[in-house]
Image (cartoon, rainbow, N blue to C red):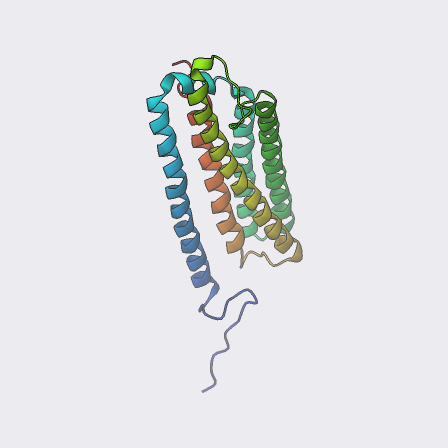
Length: 220
């Protein structure tokens, strides 16, 4: 009796039985990675919360120096990028190559806009001497010492988030190349889906950072 002939997809790794199993493994791996990221950013959120509880007055005054308008615009930009990322995943599932490319480009453009606005914010802090270090200056002077703690945490938390955004743009560039080459199909779209999980996580981190740094306690 002749042996059954199994179709071997070019993207199927040798240690998986089929694309479905490979997709499940990739998705599980990404969720495990995101769990470690939750612990990482959760530690930073905890540190920030403790210091804010200790120095509520200084943190409220320092928070007032952040540009809420730019922060709000960036929040809208990232929420929109999550939408375009979800649309890219949906288009990939349907095998709509042109739409995948279009929505990936839109997602990357929105990510670049976010980083550009964040760069403007950083420049303003540099000009205002709110970057922690020897040249740090803050008024009223009685809050300067603890305000420097606030800005240290601000730059650490938003800087790490921006780094994750840069990594996300690199991943999207890779996905865009795969979509352009035709590697991403209706049969094999798990890379776009897994990359989308990462992008959505980075967006969610900002959803927590924005109120924590820009809004909560500003008028304490």
